[in-house]
Image (cartoon, rainbow, N blue to C red; front, side):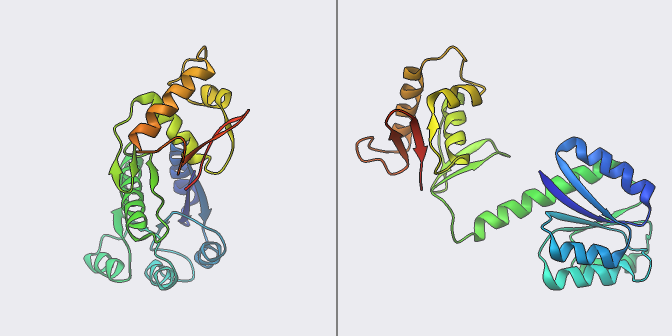
Length: 224
């Protein structure tokens, strides 16, 4: 679930936006006090900040500046202040976006998705511990050392599940139950056949597996 921190003293607006975003698997923490918002961000992990500028006790631009000294998290300014100098200062202080009020919650959602997508791509590009097999749920692809694999729907679902459960022993029955593209009447043998096709596509020798290991009497596990 995406975790969002909203620093906004208009509680009615914050509640409306929060309820809307929660429909899209986003958890929103509302702070109407900017100092509490900064403290919360420093003690908990969030994926994005939505920040008002007109706040009690401290201007939102200063809050933005303070956030950027410690965090690389995306910041979307949500403000009724339309002065061009406020917009310029917001970007200079490290904001990633500026959304003038009033606006449609759908536009906010679109901008959140855009910034999170860019953030995820950046994190993958700079990650020093990138795994060989990576599942990209947004693009619905699995890559091997950066190259997309050509997989059937069933192969994708099984390999995705193994990647998500990396290191854990997975039974054939568990794969049948949790992979939507696999018919519930499928047999263990059909799972073995699909695993065999996956191994071929990732260039793996089943006698000397690097990634997908068979576990006698149980099923499979993926290691990388």
